[in-house]
Image (tube, rainbow, N blue to C red; front, side):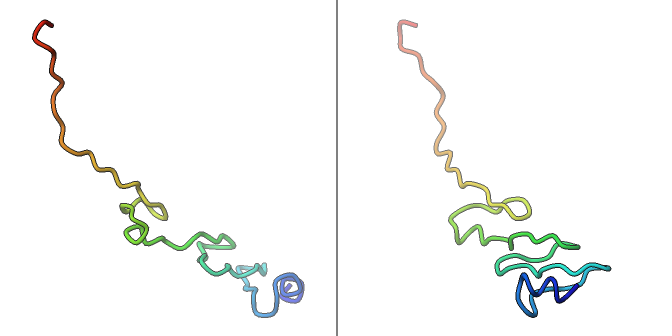
Amino acid sequence: MYRRCEADNGKGNCEKWGAVVYPKCKSGFSPSGCCICRPSTPNCQALGMNAGIDISCAKKIDIGKLTPPACSGNL
């Protein structure tokens, strides 16, 4: 199993999970259980965004000063 995986992915780039050998995660990704690679958590503040949920960032929103609507004198 290792030989077959390393033939496709290079020597030392495979690991065993249970009874099966899988390619290791590429740079910028980390394993999440068996054979699933997910992106590393981003630094949201360095990207100019707010923290999000799990591996996401939330867009920064500046609401500003709210003013109630006004009608002209004849309405």
